[in-house]
Picture (cartoon, rainbow, N blue to C red):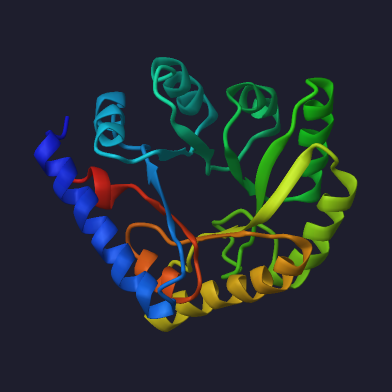
Length: 227
């Protein structure tokens, strides 16, 4: 497990980097940090909470479910950021995440909506955009994103669509990664007219670039929990 001093150092460094990137956009640009606990343990999550971090993200429903139970004494803000299998929808609903960031199709949204209705529940969600059009990634294409977003908003009464999420292009070429972020941010700008408020882009390796392109939520794991 990471020691408190190392976690504090990591958290301070990430917050400093977010600040530096944020002010290049505007001093009024606010960026939320979601700490991704995929490769860490609950003690490190509890310790990071103690150091002031409040929002945490998980890629797997089972891990989210376990950690919600084990850390239920803490008022954590949980985000689900992984690919959701349809047979795990009910389990996800029961964990009541603050935000589900990865709706990747109308079919998934409709099934979620139906199960939310049965449980008399609602969920805040983001539409995942595969802006780099990579076969290894989930998400809708940039060309269909706006239409799909509006279709889900109209047809799914129990889903509160709050914006969009993307994973940056898997490339060593910074210009290609930047283009994938800019593509998603253009979609987000259009959807702001429909009430979108969240543009979730950027992970440990590229969050500064994502913030520069307009991201207001970053999902950081290894930069926080790495040695």
